[in-house]
Length: 318
Image 1 (cartoon, helix red, strand yellow):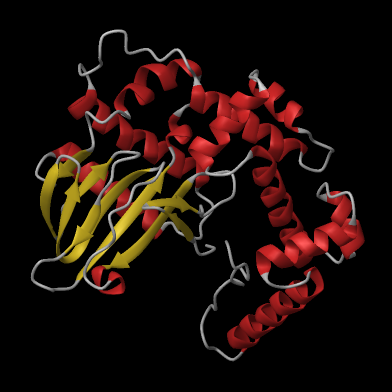
Image 2 (spheres, helix red, strand yellow; image 1 turned 135 degrees about the vertical axis):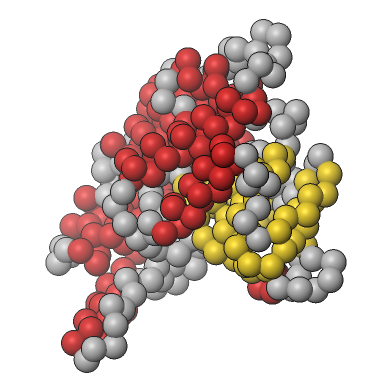
């Protein structure tokens, strides 16, 4: 699975997901890599944490929670938090992040079972592992981590729904605020617009087209992208086209010019310039570097050195 990168901005983090178009990431981390304490931060994603070895303290908006091996927590979207240790001992833990939009299969589900519980009333839910439903949530984190690199996308989606259902039934149910149905279907509208980009990126797309896909005005379109994704609609479109171009460079023998037009750029010179700004390589240099890595991996397999690793993303920004 391609490594995920983070962009930090004033205490906020924007996650780079494991699979494009599927907003989930899971990774193993240690307090040592953060010098014993992470910086206080927040992000648009919800987060599940599971301590595997050692212990840590989770500081969230609702308090400080000690977590031992086998325990964990649910941290809500936008909740400012940090992980740290007071005694300097090491700790290995898993972090599972998913964007709430992944749970919004319809407007009704979004308004009834997701958005009402993204408020500050539920910043953090400790998971001791003593109750059966808590064990199931924590086991879900382990399962998703073990599936890294696999193609069990539908199985993973089902498991995430089961984890959310456990939280809903045991923590959230009955806690809706009066009139809790949200009139602004923001996440559903955003999903409609990002889906439109993914399906039509090879065509000429204007801001008006993206806004129309969500049934909103251009200003509302831009505000939704900047609030949830930390970039403009056109920047999201350009980034998606560049990732599509990078994939074609490593999976086809098409010329740079052909790839330029295949992914929706109007000129090869603009594509080359934008590609180099993002990845630090020209398209041809990127293709050559990835080919060398693939050749090294295959050579290692032939020499009995193990399965090797998939070519890593050469990008500077993810």
